[in-house]
Image 1: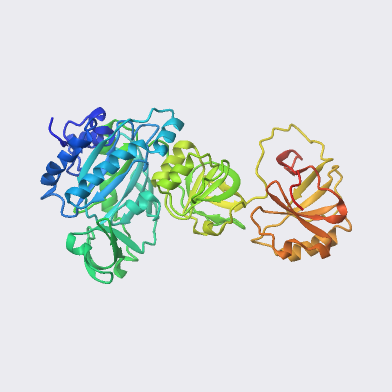
Image 2: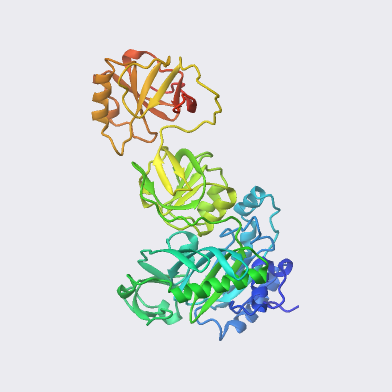
Length: 536
């Protein structure tokens, strides 16, 4: 068998699931990129020998270079997608760089994150993968479509679109323009602010310095001149032309073409739910089609909750935990992972056991949002304010509503059937009590929200109220720094860090109670945390 092999007749075992799906779409007469495949089983020596035929094939097909994409036999499955976990590499048509790109993609089959994800999803990782080689397209618009298909229509669907290449969208660095609908009806179109667009460039364009101009395509409308901001790995970074800023990215007739393509692709692949990556040059092209592993909601950004923030509801469910920003250190298990983009690094961190994910950018169809859905991890994206949430602050994430807010405690699941003894408990309340409680509590802790109340004012009010009520302290969200305000010994209070909680405790009250408790309206315990004092 010659190497590379044509797309026609590719099978999953030899060419991987991605290439095999495109072969089926091509056979069904649907538009897919011209492609060839380096199949599984090719030795590194034979791989080097395939570079010449690859370049000969690309000579008149790839003015903007090539993209080498993973195509593993086990990826793009009905329950496990491996979305964004394998490598894709854009390369110019030069022998050494093409060989390096092929090797990089093949090596991505042996990364720790692949093994960990496979184990988490109950699969055996593929020992090797095929490499799908395609000319790099220069699209006017590209993006991702997720749809439920019945008969000859998409009964519910969501499309996210950006100008130029879709890489910023799928990696989560850019939030796309959102189109949501049911059947033939478009329920809403949510615009986006796209300052830059990514386009593959010719050799001459890639040599242009920042500030020079190139012509950017604009499918269905007149092209425009765009200023070069830089370039990297064969891709131009262009400033969005001013004339395009207020224009809708995806036109209604283009949207309808994409929905028709989704129906055709779903029928060709035997799917009822489809996840489709697409690009529009002169017309639409299907870059990838696979099963939609989990349903995608149709929510858009809600209004911010009191004292909190709002984003895009990416994965349903809710969770509470300490904030942990993505960085060199592995986030602790049980934390809320906060990241600037839902890229491969965040995907790896998802496998470390976070209770929820909050991203400052990105949409619900980015690769790592897909992985979060498969793992059942609540996720909210496009929350730029999340950058300012301090590490350790206890926050509540509602992936169904798309909201994030500070929370006083980590929930401990309880199933109390009725009232419990509160003799050793400090009860958390959002308001200063008017009178002494009669439920046997040892003390009351007034919750301080640093975003809606001044601590000095609250401290004075609590000090005054303590004269007529039981022992009062203040509970602070974790992550509030221990500033001089938090050490007001002249008020008779001291600051204590207690098992991840911050407490202002009256010195005259002796030792802290043994636990902090929050109650529902029927006095059942809904939160509980031990208070084994660790530092004065």
